[in-house]
Image (tube, rainbow, N blue to C red; front, side):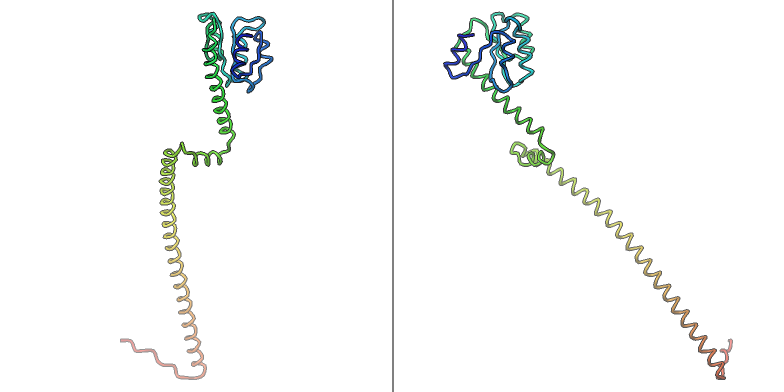
Length: 219
């Protein structure tokens, strides 16, 4: 533990040492570490249990097992619990430094992806639509979606136009029928007024003694 910590510290890493799994859990905090080097056989809490607990707290942090029993059930259980890989003892420090650099970069990529997913989940529906429309990675899908939207829009517009035209024709027919009915009613009233005035004139002439013209002879 001291040898590996000192070696990595000389290469710019800030290392926190823990003699067993329980101490590792007490020192661990999500987002604080970019790599966990985990032994398997330790007092108080072994590496299998500690690996599972750390992985559940922070799934983004890589866990690299360091064990001399590569084929043991405990190593398999630790890998199943969330460990990423295994380095067998005796440890080649240069190989360990190279693997540490790879896994530190992996932790940062995982955290960037996790932050992106959280922002995507928290983004409201209108903001999601704006992001999807402006994203460069969605150019082809956006074009296909716009074509589909335009086709649907034109189909809906055509359907609404046909319905509006039919409704206008029906209303025009009703309006024309109503106009002719009103004209017929007015003509009937005017004819009645004329007949009444003619009868009044005839009665007035009869009272004044004017000769009433005989009815026309029947053929």
